[in-house]
Amino acid sequence: MSRAVSVASLSKSYGRLKALDNISFEVDEREIFGFLGPNGAGKTTAIKIMLGLTRPDKGHVEIFGIDVQSKPDRARENIGYVSQNLSLSNEITGYENLLISAKLYGVPSSIRKSRITEIMDLLGIQDRANDLVKKYSGGMMRRLEIGAALVHRPRLLILDEPTIGLDPQVRLVVRELLRRLVDEFGITIFLTTHDMGEADELCEKIAIINSGKIGVVDTPTNLKRSVGGDSIQFETKAPEKALSILTGKFGDTKPIAKNNTISMIVNSAETALPLLINTLTRAGVIVDAIHSHRPTLDDVFLKYAGSRLTDVEREGDYSHVKQVRRTFRRMR
Amino acid sequence: MFAILEKTAVIWELELRKMRHDQTDLLIRAIQPVLWLTIFGSVFRQFRELPLGEVSYLSFITPGVLAQSVLFIAIFTGVSLVWERDLGQLDRLLAAPAPRTSIVLGKAFSGGVKGLFQAGVIFAIAFVMGVDLIYNPIYVLAVIGVVFTFGVCFSSMSIFVTTLLNTRERVMGMMQLLTMPLFFASNALYPIEIMPRWLQIVSIINPMSYVVEALRALMITGDLSRLPVALGGMAIATFIFIGAAALAFRRVGR
Ligand SMILES: Nc1ncnc2c1ncn2[C@@H]1O[C@H](COP(=O)(O)OP(=O)(O)OP(=O)(O)O)[C@@H](O)[C@H]1O
Ligand SMILES: [Mg+2]
Image (cartoon, each protein chain N blue to C red):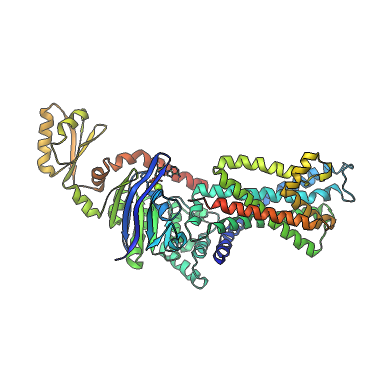
């Protein structure tokens, strides 16, 4: 199998902030590769460097063996890019947007029309082709955005948070579309997300990224297996005391406290739960609530990034959605 | 080289399509020159002391008002570029296999076309107001050429300035700061001879003066003796600003 993307020891700092800290990874052809990480992890920075839009301080990117630094336009011909923001011109029609994209990427005039019609059919927006984009719903804009990235039949599709700001139903449509692109057209997809469900469901391979560092790269199944056991979460009013009692006693990952909730990974919840409650009760720590579950990607994240994605994410996520909404509004 | 021209045409087409769908914008921008001609023109008509020869004051300032309105519209090319960058719309162009220079040229050429719309409006008003314009087709074609080049020239200048300044707030302030002296320190509203000495020097290095001079020769006086100088000055300014904009823009998205 040949390499679609190969990234070697990439670093990028903005002032004193290390947006990317020596990351390396490879994407094979015909696979869906996901960057999973919270806001500010460095996902967009990595993409901009892959497209030659930002210059790295150090490191090297190749797209299908083409060096992006020295031959950016040659590399870009192979890439379809869907940015995190809505990037289409909303004051012209959907059809016109695709037409401009086709011309920008040098699609021959003889097949332009049929290509655009084909894509509009694929995305289910053919009946709105001649409407101004500013009259589209957010979901339609997103689909058009993906369509514009497909007109030149790129071998690699790069999507920066493709489902942000979409309702669950449209998310599903977009995910199915991406799956089809790989299965039917043999495209390679690189995407970023901070939605674990999305990464789990869609990606063949996931890189966990936090604060500019890649913790691990593997398949979702292997990642979950590598957590090696069950995840336990419980609540108590004395989290510090509980932490000091438990550290080193169960499994090999350190328990993590967030407010009054403590998370930990154990080999088997069935044997660990009674022991845990007994140990804590004997030491005078009262457990208010407890539950266990099979490992999810969030637990994987805990193991490799040292925090829970849901925790880092909660506030950030909201401000992010707000920002996207603002952009929508501004574009109207 | 061929790639640059090809992609320039695409970016230009994109801008023209946007323009076609937003004609109200063009109409609104036409209001200002109308006001200049009707109000300013008729008030200053009273002053007989201006050394204008046989030309009426209204005729004298018509080319000036045309140049000014093209200047104002061209200045917005850069502003809209920064705006698009902040929205993330520019990323789409930057991520395409298109030379950076073609983005600059495509945008600048669209500034030239917007200028032509202004010219159309002003010709119409001037006709209605009875300004004695030269309607010889060759002269009119030359005016179109001058207006287009001027639009490209000042669009490039605005792209250059906005690319250097980087933030939208600074850009807005700077544009205000630039347009006023460009306009008033030129021969758009009064002949250079009546200006104080220092202003005369400023107006000689002001590209706006050359444009107005060319337009005045082609639209009003028909006296082409100074036309080569005017066109030469304009061509130099255009080349300088296109070059500066293209150079500055290479750093964008890098
Ligand atoms: N142009 C810039 N100037 C300064 N800092 C920047 C710039 N671009 C990104 N950063 C910083 O680099 C870090 C990584 O940003 P990046 O946009 O790559 O994160 P992200 O993973 O895409 O986050 P999100 O999920 O919010 O999109 C952030 O701390 C951000 O503030
Ligand atoms: Mg991002």
